[in-house]
Length: 296
Image (cartoon, rainbow, N blue to C red; front, side, top):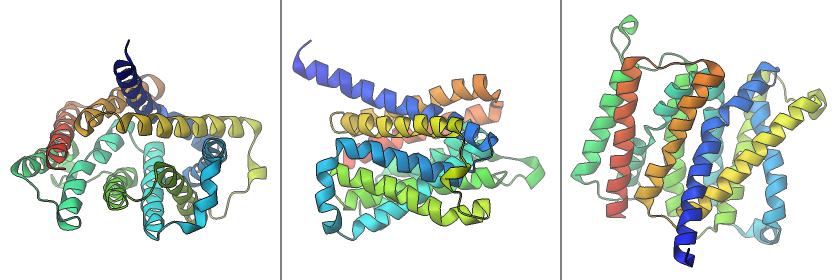
């Protein structure tokens, strides 16, 4: 295997492994929730552990921590809200519905890129938006709500908000091309910690202190932290060596992993309209990625 093929193999493996991590990470968070640890507290401490582990890899980058531009603050806050709302959504909602609502994010990315970054949206972009909205309508259609295609509960609203936050994070990242990958990674992790800490009193009624955790709690949170760190490092390696469209398609492997995991670990099953609507959303995500790659 020559060097180029070897790099390509590891890049593909990195993206698939990252997708696998995100496809199963909801389960240990649910274990924490069942043990009485809220999503806010679990998010704060797992990202705290991830930062400690990451410091081993990025120790030399700490020297410039106070010389970062102000855009890193907005990136941290957007990413923090994205990750916290996603965790709360997968803890309390049906995994696949949450993930599919999250995968409406290409719509918001196209719109934000059009109005904020002044990127021209081509016909294929409008087609992707239309297909995504059709998929959402089919999946969310509920006669009990008068046929309105709205999220059914708070978890699904959080999933929708997380997808919007993810798109905002992506757009800020594109505008912050001067930031290093290490700076962006740490800004995301620190942002989740900050947002989780601020929201914890509203979720728990107080700030959860470490002395309340059992050894098992710490072990589970350690596993989550390792998954978070591994997913970040592997995905970063993959996206720097694989074309954007191909990377987006490979990362949809997360949905396959989540579908299998939610079926066997949580006994969750999707209805026919969820399969059809979800299929349209996934197709639109691939279509949007293709359009975005061709115009970037």
